[in-house]
Length: 307
Image (cartoon, rainbow, N blue to C red; front, side):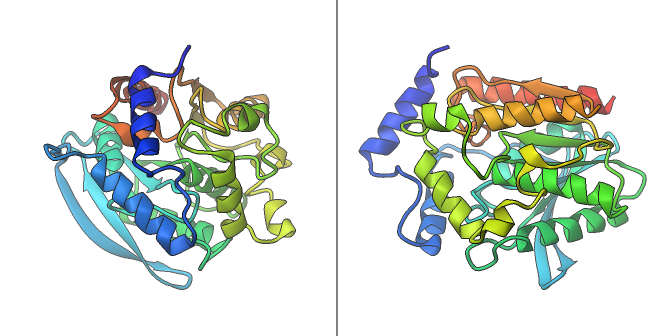
């Protein structure tokens, strides 16, 4: 399919206004720029999706308190989600992903715990993943007996996948499913889509290279199985997965490949491609019609997977 025309307009407007590329001179400047973009995307008439309740809390993390935000859905169906926001392990926070968290909570009838994990470059790998594991344990302890999903988008999906591996290997919280929305799975950046979609589609190859430099400054870190997911030696025994990808995303092929690796290891997988869509489409809810529709399809697949 061609690029969705609404996304073509969005990208052209952002480019003309100097909002792209995403990466600025420093981590802090990039963080501030990304936050401004995320908040501006909602527009003057924005009204947040209604949920049952929203409350901030704190998890006792390995290096201090980790803020979390807990969303209660309108219709609670006895599930719980630990959610990791995207942003290249450098940007993003509880506010930037508030619309996504509201949508996920309501769509699957789950209490959702959004995690404000530590960010690179101040806190490179494994700090964000360590915070994720602390939040995962906190969620399991706070909401026992619920079907527990670890979920995330982009860098958050990478954290979710790594957390699923650690939970399996460390006898951590039992997980019913993992939701991986356009995951970062290949720090070598060697897949064809990284070249084909590396310019002109919101997230660029240069952006990803910079994000990896901040999060994984050493070669040893980039080779870690919890990071280099396409070369992780053993994926057997992981929870069922919904993997969503986007046609014009530099990360498309690695998401597709990770879905296939999971399936080959005997993991139940629902792979939902995104024809005509770009990386980050989950964050354009209420802005791009096809992003809304595809996000509901992805969450419908998760709902179905949870039974």
